[in-house]
Image (cartoon, rainbow, N blue to C red; front, side, top):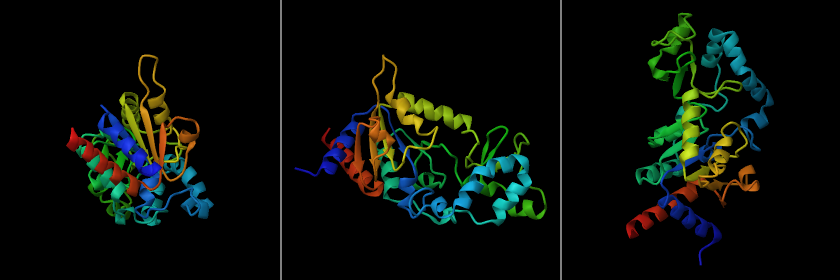
Length: 273
């Protein structure tokens, strides 16, 4: 007989293999396995530096008041998470890519801004809180690769903030700051995915940051005519989703160990069918 975790991994693989529209939600737990520090954990960036958290809470207000000054600060101060471009995807990220390639996963919605899902190769990706790899127009919502703007030249020539080439609006980083609305296109598509999924795989998120944490509840609380989605948690520790009975079961451990095992099980099921 297998261990309880192994039995649950096999159960999750069956749920994924039998699903019509499975999606995954990911949070900081999958990124910490790539070496990226989290914010609120025991060794988190904000736990160690509360002033950095206070600045983060004021950031969007500061952008609205003085976009040029905000940009200059961003370009001359080191990021609280260091150089995110130096981090690489881990086995958990690549396992989600494989599940997508197998057709067992239709979409990944992530809280993370590090761009690691994109680097790993996930195709149908919704970055709920934006991405450090991109910039976004605050007027029309258009997104741009960072390298499309020569930000150092704009700062040198005192031409900050950058402006959108499509509508002329002010451009900021794509990452969603405290107090900033979730971009409407991402919010709408994420809600649509939560409403139509029949399996939701939750990977490495504490499920306490809203409105992202509402997505599992949306998937679970269907109307009377619809069947609730099966919610599977892969987390190091139980979360409010576990405690409130939103998730159907919790596979406790590291995403980089559990998700690759899930892939192998799905492949095995496909080979038998």
